[in-house]
Length: 140
Image (cartoon, rainbow, N blue to C red; front, side, top):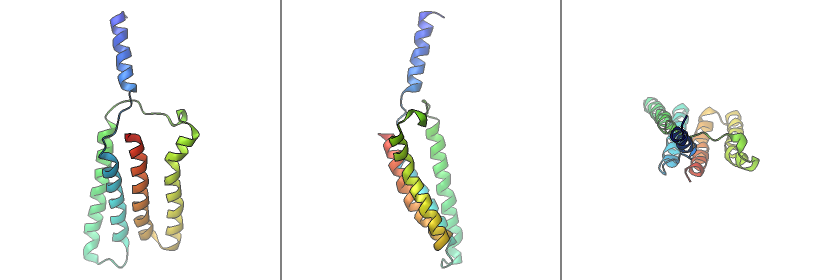
């Protein structure tokens, strides 16, 4: 390998390691779609919802979650190096994970007390907000 090839390899490695920034619109859109899907599914499962509304609400849930998957796949192909959690300090890892863990604990309590439908509505709102927070930190 000559010097020019080595410099080319080093430049490629530097570009791959550069932090790939998320667009500013992605945190609210991704979190909003996720929240809308969970809320729509929760409302569709409620017994007080008119049967004529169930299928449109289920369709909204499927379409919004497909949108989340599509956005994630599109932005996941942007390249770069995925940061390893082990390389981050413990405090930063807890800041990323703790909101979702709290929501999951509350979800279990809601499911046990008021049922799956209300758990999904709460989960949509809370996990949507948590995801927005987490993604907005990554977009900076």
